Each structure stands twice: as C-alpha cells, then as structure tokens.
Image (cartoon, rainbow, N blue to C red):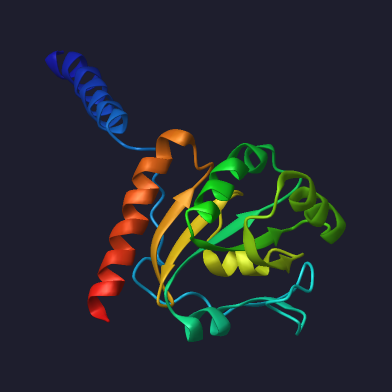
Length: 185
C-alpha cells in the first residue's frame, strides 16, 4: 500500500528535477563538433564574381586558410526573416573591420543577390549552397548561423540571429581572438 503512494511521488520528483535543470540551460547555445577543429573543406560557386574572386569561386576554405587571420562565415538566405533582422549587425561588424564571408543557403541566386543589393553587402565574397550540402558539412541547423574562424579553425558558432544584446559578447570574442593572433606574430 505504501509503495503505491511512493512511486508516483518519486516519478514526480525525478520529472521535476529534469524540468528544473532545463531552466538553467541556454537554448541558443547549441554545441558544435567543429569547435577547435579546421573548417570543413568547402568550395562553392560565387554568387557574384567580385574583384576578390574573378575565378567564379565564391567560397573556398583553402583560400581563407591560406590568408589566415580572423574571419566570420555567415549562412543566410533571402527567404529567412531572421536573416533580415540580423543583417544590420553584420554590417556593423564589417564597419568594425571584420571580414565576413557569406554562404547563400538553399536560396535562388537572384534572390540572394537582391537581398544584399537591397540591404547592403557586408560580405567579402558569397558562395552559393543551392542544395545545402555545405550546410550539412558545417552542421547548420537553420539560418542564420555564424562561425568565427581563426587561422582556419572554428573557434565559435553563433546559432540564430545576432541581436544587439549579442554584439557586446561577439565583439569581445573577436577582440580577444584578434589580440591572441597578434601576440603569436
């Protein structure tokens, strides 16, 4: 008889403990297996042939790794409302001197081009990932996602929109990475 009363109480206590633990988690922090590893090998055609890439290659990890330094890789799409919200933050990071490479994820090239033509282009170059294969290789869950790369290695992944309240943390991370890079020279 006592066992019938204790079992539901124990089940409730275990469920309560799991739910209480969940309150302390950060849902925007999604771990990435790429952290502290080299960028996935990726070569994508150019959205537009720019002065930087007259070859028609819009995104190449080999080119980025060869140049070294600190860069951001941003997966975006014109059909993605959060990408529009994030765009001013990317423009701000560009104005601060950070190099951002864009990957138009599962987007029509003409739509991706109109997106940057209308909102401003924060990207050094843009690669086109029509089928989403590069997104799979990079572990992209949904756009927008931004990766911070230092000398060809992934040091940080930001899932979702870079909001104004995220900018302070992102700028601090970028400044720290830039400082550590300068100290190694």
